[in-house]
Image (cartoon, rainbow, N blue to C red; front, side, top):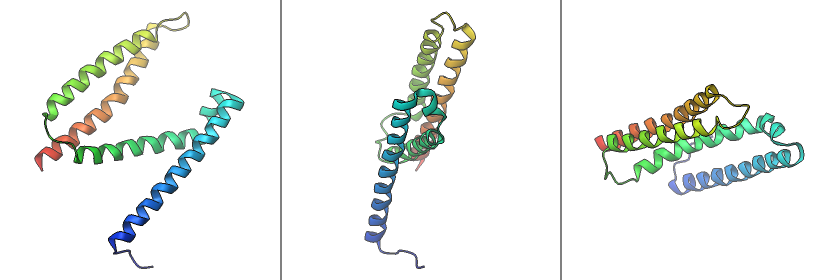
Length: 139
């Protein structure tokens, strides 16, 4: 099999892959919605398609970040943007951690754990965007 050298064919191939990805994602979402409606949230999140869907969306989000940073105008300092992002992230983590302790069955340990998970889940993309902006600015 020969490698494709024509740019138009490469673009058409990428468009076909994108369409297949969209159809596949809609199919996964439809199956998950059906599981949610018929069996409930527990069964939906227990379905292996749920994990495939989450991994696919996380990978797609990280790949999209790389493209969006390429076309971003370098107006702000990457350090300033990271500082603002971290400030908002700390505030939201504390707020969500505090709100998750409301209720009889939840304790302060639950709030700390939920807040910590929110912080870590927000810190990873923030550091990745900082790295991309810093690399883009150096080029």
